[in-house]
Image (cartoon, helix red, strand yellow):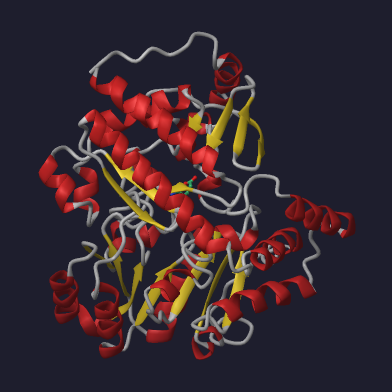
Length: 443
Ligand code: HOZ
């Protein structure tokens, strides 16, 4: 493989900031995936984002596909979101009291998601997941939670086992600091494996409180469910009187207005949300059947609380975002941009003779650097398939794309996100950069 040269001085200010950051924050970052460690670079520090573009502190400009890992479906600094947040800010940032904005956002979500007639706002996806685990155990009186290998549900102790996203990227899919007693009740099964799901229920059925899953896996890269897989899980949960829990933090309002559950016509008992519903501000929510949600305090005994829960700034950004997503052309536009990017990446890989599997669901997309033609044909169906990818090749691709002004997530095990601010021209530029990068990697 050709040696990839980095342009000297291109990231000078970022590098200086990173040196300062390293003395102040572990690894110099506020979240591990940002560190660029797995692609052997120091991170780029961002000065601003506008539309589909990012500008770093050295004034390099990028077409962005990180998009803050999903929330920015309207693009960076969208005028309507800015106006809503500024208006709310002029009235106060947080009250610790009820606001009408919580109701407005809750109504927008419940109207779009019939399986979520009642919900509780929290401040992050992790918090939504932690609270849901407690509710599932309380509602069923059972201890065990089934999760999918490579599924990532934030950093809640119970589910930080065989976890994707940054945990896999940085080689710690199960973290120290979590007593084995805490994860003794966590069962892990491979995605898209119906026999494994049936077996775990045959063995542990009466002790299982629920299955937690991303209906479309997004934290090992994008892996859609096989036909029949989600209906089977629904059937097993109903048969064994436990809860089907959909983590739609990433897919909610992303793959369809009603999320993956609408796309695949599956009815979860509880849904976790985050990202898009906060329009780029910190938010999370969990919701589902009213008989379950009524068990949450103060309506019921399951305690969960938060000073910044339902924060008015996040609510305002979420309201305007979800309203704009009601327009008819939104999801067709995202689909068409996604399809164009997928076709362009596939053609680029073919012309460079690099085995690449591009998997996509609407505006979530991941090119997987599989090792051979047979794996390319089989596709990436689960965590084991994703782990088998050539992360060295991905790292080389990442560095070349960055140099060409394309910001993709710095890990093979993440989804790229397309927004409504991306244009056909942005997609064309990205395909040209990928074609050049893949050619350079084989030169
Ligand atoms: N779920 C996000 C990426 N897969 C989280 C981003 C982060 O960990 O910072």
